Length: 216
Image (cartoon, rainbow, N blue to C red):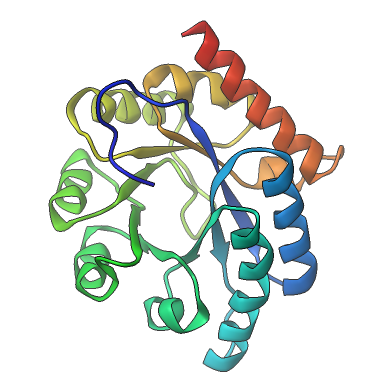
């Protein structure tokens, strides 16, 4: 996940997991998705367990995800990223990002989410974020409207080189995110809860990326 320069490359998928339960089953699902469609990264959400259990969980999931060519990013839990073999961390807000960057860079990815204002996003960029994410749900499940996300992504894509991730609450949100200039589109529950199965849903999401990019 690197800064864009010159011609903008096609947008890619960023998969957000539910809170991990069975790591072997989740890792297998994620690996199948990443082998089937182009997935740039997976954001792994962890339960509240002891440190050793979490490290083992991450290692189990990482085997399939990284083996399929996707980066594994941990939500928070900066303390275990390197020891668990993950590729980076996704931090909540500019303050957490600023504290994390010296511990992650230059070898690990530092992503910034839960950015409430344009100022928050700019602070995160100045602090060294490798990407910013707009629109993902907060801890209570609340998220901005599609219009608000599109507005933030369009502003960012126009002004900044650092990649941005647009969260798509539904597959129907993907077209607007791509049209606004998102470098990555994040999908979560809309894929994992799809009655067709997560692989079919992820393939649908990837197809929508290609269709909307071709039409741009």
